[in-house]
Length: 119
Image (cartoon, rainbow, N blue to C red; front, side, top):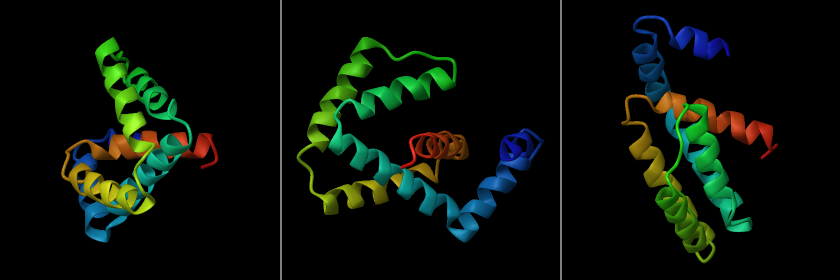
């Protein structure tokens, strides 16, 4: 919550993102969260659609039925992927995320979810 209050100040988000990128914290956290979600999805195929619904509701939005179906299809695909492939995908996703302007908000949400479920 403190980070969220700081992030609401003018210019704070840019400063926050720059520092996270400078020290590699954003990348490491994004990769950890992605790996956690992918491994959880590999264990339970309902995890990814559930996270999609939770994530969109946290930003006051809803997933369309087609989006939920796509997440279910992706979950089924993750069931057969090796652990090394999961690490590669998580690495690529983390690299893409840190280039996104608002990725710190995704990291806050992902961190909250992993903490909530003691992952």
